[in-house]
Length: 259
Length: 281
Image (cartoon, each protein chain N blue to C red):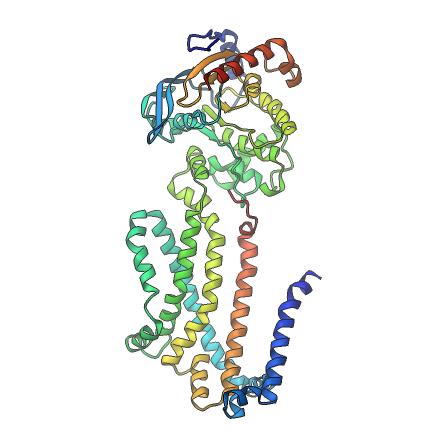
C-alpha cells in the first residue's frame, strides 16, 4: 500500500504527459505549430517501436555509456570524499584551494571536452575526465559541508574522552558527513549522464551520445528520442539505487536530531 | 543581609571521611584526585565571565557549583577539563597544571546527552576505551557490567533514538565513567529532563556516585539538586562569577530523596543558598 502510494503519483504524471504528447504528435499539433515536417515529431509509440527495433544497437551503446558513467562517477566519489577530508583537516588548504574548486566549475565543459579529446584521444579517457570533473564538485562541496556540520560540543566531549584528531574524524565527523555525501552523490549521478553524452558527442565511436549525434544528423528523430529515453531510465535507476543504499548505510541522515 | 565571601563556610568534616569510604568500596575504577582552583579568571573578549574563583575538592569529594544562568559555570567546567586555559589564576588536578594533563585526568559530561545516533547504546557508552585503542569487543566487554549495575541491562543494542531522555542521560553518564578518569565533571546533567524523571535520576545518580571513589565537580542551576547530590555546594555570584558562599551537605545521601529534601536542615540550607544567589543578582 505504501509502495503504491509512492509509485502511483509519478507514474500517473508520466502516463498523462506521454498521452498528451501522443495526441499532439498523432494529430500533428506540434509540427503544425512549429511549421515543421510531421516526421520530425515522433509520438511516444513511434519511439517505443524504435526502441524495440534498435534494441541491439541501443543495448551495445548503452553498455558503453554505462561503463563510462559508473567508472567516472566512482572516480569522482573517491576523489571528492578524499579532497573534502583533506580540505577539512587542513583549514589553510581549504582557504587556498576552495576558490580553485569553485573556479573549476566555471570552465565550460563545451570548451574543455574537445581539448580533452585532443589530449587523451578517442578512448574512454576523456569521457572519464569529463564525467569525473563534473561530478566531483557537488560531492566535494556537500561532503565538506557535512564534515563542518559537526556540533562543537560533541568535539569537546570526544576530546575529553581521549579522542585524537583522526578519531574525531572517524567516529564523529565522517558519520555526520555521510548523509551529506549521499546528497552530493545523488546530484552528481544525474548530471554524470549528461556529462557522458557530452563527452561522446565531441568524439567517440560508441555510446548513447554518439548514437544520438549520428541519428540526429540523419534526422532519425525516433532513434534520437529512443536513446534519450534510455538515458533518462538510467538516471532514474541510478538515483534510485543510491537512495536505497543511503537508507541502508546512512539511515541517521533523515532523523533530524543528530548530535 | 548581604551574603559576602566571609559568610560562614561549613567545614565538611564528615564529607571527606565519606569520600574515603567510597574509595574503599570501588574496585577497578580509579580513585579521585584533588582539585584546586586559585583565583581563576576568564573573559570572552570584553565580557568578564569568571571573576576569581577559589575552590577546592578533596579526592573522592562531590562538589556542586550552583549559580544563576550565565555566571560562567559551564566555562569553569571546561577550563577545569583542560579544554582551555584561564586568563588568570591556577587550576590544579592532583599534580597536573597543564591543560593537556588536566584533559587526561578529567571526563566531561556535557549538558545534552550528545549520544551519537549511528552507534548503539553500548557503543556510545564505550567510546572512551575505543578512542584509547580497544577493539569493539574489548570496549563492549568493559561497558557490559556497567549496564547491569546501572539498570540498563537489555538496552545495550538499542539506538539512542529508541531510548527515553532519562535512559539517554544514564548512558551519557556511563560513557563518562568509562573514560576511567579520576575526576568527573558533570555539566547540568539533568537540565533537559522533566521534573519527575529528574527526581528519579537524582536518586539514581546519588546511588551511582556512592559506589564511585572519583572526585566529582557538578554544575547545576538547581540548588535542591546540588544540596541533595553533593558533599559540599559552592554558590556562585552572577557574572563575573565568584564563590559567594559554600555550604555543607545538610543530609546524608543515603536518604531517599523525598525525605532528604523535606528535612528542615535541608530546607534551611536551600533558602540560604537561594538568598545568596538572589542578593548578589
